[in-house]
Length: 506
Image (cartoon, rainbow, N blue to C red; front, side):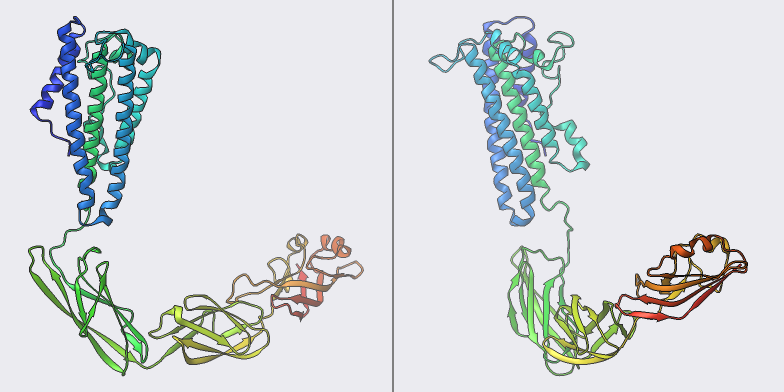
């Protein structure tokens, strides 16, 4: 909320406007003295607002919920620092103008109250006016930045600190198209300039109060308000193995992390932290079990109320589940993903081993298996320190690839399509693992072209040998291309001999 203005504050504002307007008519001793009175009243008001703001700042530490108040307190402290910095800067400007006008007399009064040159010299010639205007604008922008965007427009309209020409002097004093500096400080008496700066200090203090009140009101403003309280229990599992640990978290519905209830579970007292109580015990005996207890809370009026609860869980025999993510086969040369779980045991507490290969844990319940020779392998499981039943897997080589020229597997291929290909391919089709590739190591190619001598060549890679390229470029319907002695290498590193393949050109 904005700080309310009492009758005294309203009178100070009215006097400030009236005296400012009278400057345009005459600068008499009475007017100068009146400005002195207004300045004293504004400074008294500033002291009062400072005391009020100090009280509000102290309330951030008395909310009873420091964690919720912390982010708003942090913003309030930044508002305080920014406002204090500006207040001191305005004090410095007042001191500079007073010094330029002759300083203070033995009674602490300004010697040159009517001096009109000092404010003009400091604020216009020394460029302190534009500097002040910039600082006030920056402060206003920063203060508005602390409010929620939803109420930003409201604060832009109501924030006391406003930097506009004509608003402070009634809109009729000063030359047309005057700058903000000349409008406020050009050829005004020293006491008037000091009063104007005091007024800006008052605007800063009132704006600070507006922001701090707003921030304090936001503590808990967006939280749900509950009218019922109910205990709840959260178990780490309702199906456990004999010897496993049961973990139960007990709290109340609509609870606060700063309220610690009194909790009793199965006759044992549980100490709550951050509003939650954690109860642990090792379970034994197969079958259904029940966790019982009470949660006791004290109402704001001092009355104590207890809320009973009960939660069922089951203790079962040890069970293990192992599944191959791709199928019940492990392939040589690949990283085979395996998922392993044990009923009632967190995935982080499950480990595994293999008797014919190597196994690496990649995540909670996730493993990668590498094997090197065909046959079988048994994967063993340890859950929560106990050995579980394992499972046997078959170990196989990766299937042979399919030989292709371009996208064709033969036995027929158009001449125009064959001519634009660069070599022989070995693709693994319909395999469960993605990205598995074969490399063509070598092969012999022979071309039986009508009306031409038989051409052949040896290739030590997938590409067609240069010796047969002219014949390939002149292929016509009825010609036949033979591939034999084909050798390929898979990701397992094994070089394989492949069956011959022929392409009849059409």
